[in-house]
Length: 224
Image (cartoon, rainbow, N blue to C red):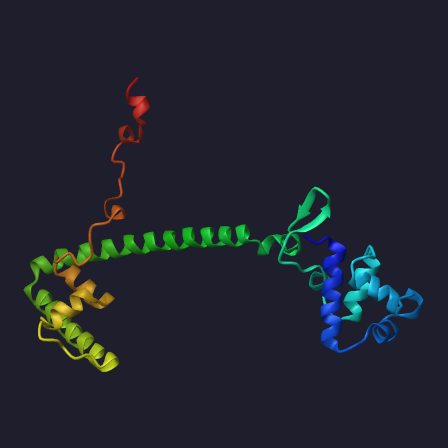
């Protein structure tokens, strides 16, 4: 396992070589003369025999036109002492970019999405209940929804034929059966309005509502 000076040296050598520059030219042309870099110093850095200071790392990053993170990059843990290793990649990553931070962000987004879904479901249930009540009393409305459902089933199946070049097999049971297995929101809504229960009852569909103060009492309190 390498120490941090060896990691810096390996990265410096790799990037210098990719530039096609020798150590002497690199030391002469890429550093300010008052920094005192020579080909011998560059050799010591690249072989890990020189303990790199902060000044070295910053000067090298400027000379190679790279970031400090590029110089410290290592896919393996690095030894800081005989019995202490460190994950350099994790230390260079900002807190907001860590896997845990990203996962937490997804967790919060999932909660927000579920809250929106719950509110949308409540609106759907309230609207559909009103539709069903009217459909039960109005044959013309039922017939209108049935005609619309038949049209959507036909259009949906015809769309699949055109899009996927679908050819009905011998056991094909018709538009209605195919669309039932691959429904669109419009088809599901129409079926639900006709009380065919296109959507299965959901936990949120019967959210508990307190009708008296007694119902808000906790079980432990009613036992006393």
